[in-house]
Length: 478
Ligand code: ADP
Ligand code: MG
Image (cartoon, rainbow, N blue to C red; front, side, top):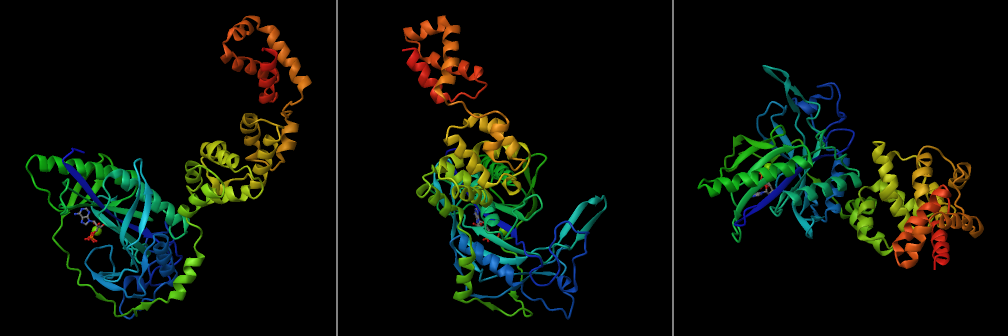
């Protein structure tokens, strides 16, 4: 970014709550069903129907609020937001208006430069609209109303992000959090998580916000980043060449990585909000909120701390393990069987993660039992097998078959040789076979020790205990 300007970004994220039924009726929320098969008269808002609020959706919204350090509003009501659009069957959307269920709060992110709290303005509940589909017929648009009425929370930040990197980290954290507390599957491709990015620029030092552009319905974190970068550069060019920014609503074109205007935005839309007369206001008790709070799992930020303090892991390891709840739970399960916490972290972040990636799967589907991993680490620590043989020869088998690692190592003839007499023979062979190198070593080229160790390793077919080999070699070459 050119030095004179700074960017200001505020993000609105819609997250579909993973309840089985819709926000105000029993229609299923299943993704991918035959179009217009989960559409009752209530979803269509036919006269005489009455909506009824889904309690679980309210609980989920409160969960997110607690996880984001928000204040929870006790006295709530739903309003009708009136507008016309083909995917909005009732002609209005039921949403919270003046009293969002959660206020303020923040999500902590770590960028390459700092740790920062991204401030939230609010989290409110609302229902989703249906979907217009433009690519089935050339001359017609289809409407699928299955999604209409699905519960959403909208998570709105203050205009406090400064660049696309912060936006990227924020969305990564947010997605991790909704999955962690199991309120949304976080799947951006399927639209369970959608982001609108509001972007403006201003001169550095200026307090007033600049005119903003809103890029709607971004469906991947990478596209959010690209859209922000594109807009910032475009806006700077406009201002630098003497133009003014117009307030616009835009879309992102994934084919060209650019944005295009879908409408110029008037100052404020008139949605004629009013309290929905068919829905009674809902009041929460402190006790109800307390119960939800105690049902929450430990959150990533807490676990990252505890992994460092109680398990003495590095910040890096702790964060890697807390990438998702399944991985960190796997760590804890293994740690209850084996106290070598650092080794467990290394296995999970290293060879096991690699193996799962290569197989195109994840910890959710891991076959290896924590007990077996604990036993594997134990036989390494006992010197029965070395790490690299364990990682390359045993792990691929253990990821598919339930065998005691020691039994497997024995059956594959991989048990490490740790008795001096056996190793002595290989060491002597190597020393006799390489007289020139030995002479160089004795003259001071100590780096050659690696070569000798490697030779012994070869002769032992990887089974000689490398520590013992090094000690013996060093003694004999003194
Ligand atoms: P709307 O509902 O019309 O989109 P809001 O006032 O709720 O408007 O703001 C939506 C988002 O836009 C918020 O995240 C807010 O922080 C952000 N925002 C508002 N003004 C600006 C601005 N000038 N530049 C960048 N972001 C902004
Ligand atoms: Mg908006």
